Length: 426
Image (tube, rainbow, N blue to C red; front, side, top):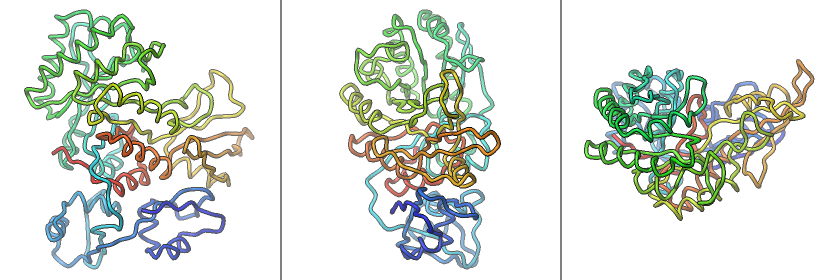
C-alpha cells in the first residue's frame, strides 16, 4: 500500500502512471469524484499482485475456492462489487495486492439501526463485529428495544458477529448517571436486566454484549465493576463475551465525572474485552482541533496497557470529523461530517488540504460562499488512519473499534484491509 498526497496538477491518470496501476482501479478503490482531485488530499494506491479474469459461469465462491480464499476476501479486495456481489465475464478481479500484512486484527464497527443499507453492505466485508447502538433499560431492569432484526440478519450473512449494546443513554441523547446509579445499587433489578439481556441475545442471534455506562458517579465505581462481573459470569458460559467501553484516561487518578468510575484495572479484569474511546478531543461544542490527535491517543494507550492485557484492548478510531465556524464562540456547535464529505467541501470551495504532523490529522480552511464566514474542518484520511493503526501494532492490541460506520469511508477501510487480515468471528 502506498499513500499518495495529491499535488497541484495531479490527475487520476498521472498518479496511476506514476505507480503503474489502472486509473479505473485507483478511482474505484478511493471512490473518487469525477470532477477532479483536491490539492493535499490522500489517495490509497494498491498494486495488484494476483488478478483473475472472470469466465462465463464463474461465481464469487468458485473463484474464491480456486485461490484458497473466501468470497468475503474478494469483496475486500474489490469494493466495487461489494454492494451486490455481481460479476461478469471479462471482468478483472484482484485476488491479492502487493505487500505483506502485519497479522490479524479484530475490527468492531458501531452503527445505529437507521444506517443506510448500501453503506452497511459495503462496510461489512471489513468488519469482525457490528455493534448496534443502543438498547436502553428501565430502573426495574426492563429492556428498551430497537429495530435491529435486519442489521443482525445482514451482519450474519457476511460472517460478522452482531453485538448488542447496552447503555444509559436517555431519550434526550445524554448519558444518565441517575439511571446507572439506580441499576448499580439494586441487585434485584440487575437480575431482571441480566435475564432480559440473555433472553434477547438468544432470540435475536447476538454473539456479544457491549456495556457503555458513561458519567457514572464516582461512588458507584466498585458497583459498576461488580455489575460487569455478574454479566460476564452469566453470559460467558453461554458463549457470549462481554465488552466494556472506557473513557480515554491517562492515569488512575484522573479527575472528572467522565473518568473516575471507569476503573481500567477493575473493569478490564472482569470484561472479556474493552473499548478505549480514543476520540472526541475535538467535539461538537469544543474548540476546533483534531477528533483523535495521535499524541493524545498514544498517552491513553500507553496507560491502558499498564492496567489491562493488550489482547483485551480495542482502540477506538473515528470515521468522522467536524466543521467549525470561525471565529470559534464557546457554546457554538460544530457540524459533524464524514471524510468523503469533507473532501467534497474542499473541492467545491477550492480549499487546500493541510496535514498536522503532531496530531497526524488533515484539516483545511474555507470560506462559506453563502455567508462569507470562515470555517475550519478537521477530519480523517488514509494517513491519519495509518498512524492510528501503527499505534495498534506498536502496542500489539487485539483490535479497533470504529465510531462509527454510518458514513462510507473507503480509504479508512482500504488501509485496514491493506495492513491486516481481518478477523472473522463467524
